[in-house]
Image (cartoon, rainbow, N blue to C red; front, side, top):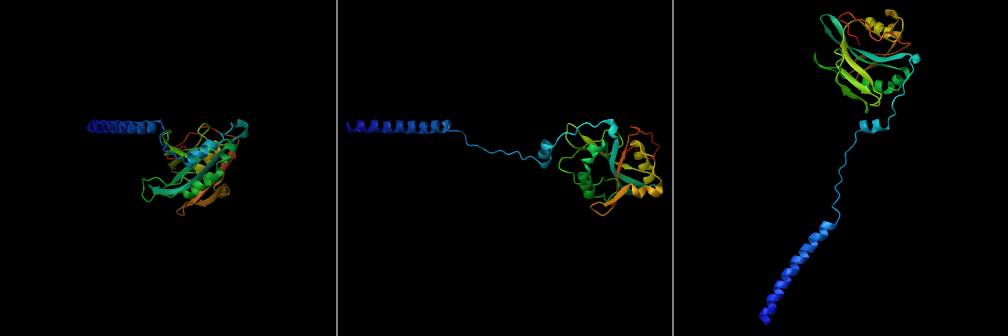
Length: 219
């Protein structure tokens, strides 16, 4: 009899151990799973864009405005080339982008070798995209994604007079004489100290597309 009791106790203890083990597993299964905090860190670009207001449509009576810049590039075949940055739209829409545009220009670093593109720091909510016009090297989207205004980056030849007169025609302004060109621009410097000719042209609106003769790109 003592031996039988000892066997039963041993089996009982074994069953109790199994039951206790199963109970622990069940209890663990009933508890809420540990929370793993997965934080998708929003970039400043996304955060800013979510709080941005889309641009309101402007009446055509407001006219047209070009905010742009010319930066001396390499000399090719005896001809001065220019890095050109340009955005065009309604005066109020373009006006909202002036501060970011100036910060962008001041961040530009020109390429050391021919064939390379300038480097720059984009404002938080600006985004680059491929150019689709066959002329520009790059498009930069500014503003809200639902009402974007694009800035183009291109590499063009010609003189400042010819290029700026073309822009004046695009916004409906008469051409400026070469001697008066400095009245149109404000000089700035790139991050590496190269002179920038910054322009802000406003007019009643001109031809959407002007015919160009080589080697001047339509920019």
